[in-house]
Length: 500
Image (cartoon, rainbow, N blue to C red; front, side, top):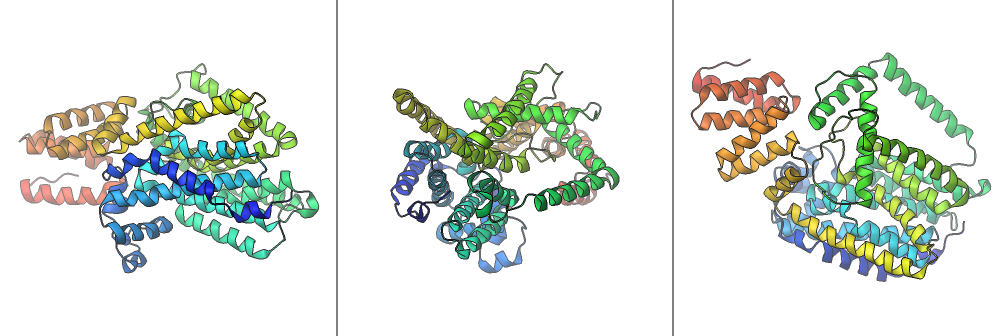
């Protein structure tokens, strides 16, 4: 496929101005937001973002590209979060423009290009990444990957090697933002497979080296999984995830986790089409049987997805590429290897670029003019309004966790954080109630036990405090080893009590 030089050079900045302006309009309310959620450990308590020297010390490892962008925000605005949202919105608007450019490079018609960019920009599932400053890593990684694929496409117009260098650098920066960027080279292969004849390809002139590499990698992973402890590590990881996010304490049947995983996929896929009841935290209950609606929907969806992949391989290259983008970037966050959350809105941020390309292609091909213009405009307008409303959820910690509680009242994580909000307000009665609900649902919630111990101690109920402190210490979470050691020392000095 011949790539238009003018398209990839991006000579017209009109779409960029429009998309940046629209992003600023939809996310205006974020300028009034305070620090929330992971902003505290990632920004407020992170010394690395305060100077170049502190950054080089790397006291808070991970996500170096994100920290570099924070250096600019801190230099300009200090710890005033309103100013930080300028850059946050910029990256989202820029990503919308990069989606527009990629849609153009893939030869979507003008209507389809705008649909793709606007869908990426306005979909309510994107709000979590844009409204929460600590999630800038997703926007940065997406920008780098979009630049990388555009540079790779640009290489095939003139075979100038500097574009491969740009693609490689963009990929490296993407990895410095978030590890999910590791899949970008697979998109290079997907593009070559459907858009270029074998003689014009760079990486995919022959299939056998890649198939050999895939076979060797599969053999290595299989050997580790079955013979060198991988299965035990995997089982421990998914059991811990189900305890934390499904409140499940039953037997560890081998087939159980795949069913929960498929159910979580269906749950999140539904949010694409019906983005209501969005929250920071979701509790995915273990399916009661094979008739669970989400489980059945997930299995059917996988079957349809495979069919569409095979069909688009031969008949619709843009759809194939868009689905490849969405699926490749979904895999790292899909919980094939258990993560921290079974479902999260931010997991859709980068895959949304591929889904937007598919939607843009389909919208641009609608034969009926009314549906193409009026129907699409209505959908995008509704999404924009929902996104604007959803930004209010991220106003402050109380709004964030209150919304999460309304959506998922059985989330022990949410209950603990809502208890924290009330504890900081000085409302010990409300805080105690939320913490108690949390440990009743999930006795393994160590922070809730610790916080209950604090409240009981402040209320003069030392026996109750020691009981919860003991449970916190017995759980022995690696995340709270420092807090556990400090607690033991304090109790020994203050009360002469030694807890194991």
